[in-house]
Length: 206
Image (cartoon, rainbow, N blue to C red; front, side, top):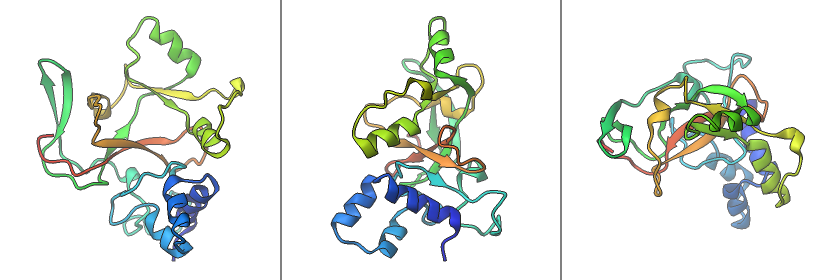
């Protein structure tokens, strides 16, 4: 039996027309089959969920150690090495092979407004700024138009001054990772946790 948090992941995916769900529906898959395709499977996320993953939290009655819907909150599992490349600067690589869908780490930093982000960009490099724009993204996916509500500007995670290892992943035109919005203690769409997962199998040293 799936818990309420897992069902919320599925319900939000259905409500917001997640591409994977739409594809399964076109193929006339049953709801029970779709449920198996959404969310974590054996501590991996094989397919990104555009509307977000809702993990169990401190308010849930499930067993903390045995619950299969707790992953990002458990912290770093992958063995990563920080190194410096003479051309690209600092970067991260894995010390062991990582299967597709493996959780790497969260991208963390200061929570600031978009206006503050623009102000900082005048004097600092903005390459470590990431917008928390899930609300706008969902609006666009559902309504297929731009969100003109200027009063609902997204917040920004700025890892320039305070962050973790996640800030050292290098940009790539062919990325082997993706960012997944994950909700744990808060279900406020404005403030997701940004979790990095492998898009493909990543070999040691990459």
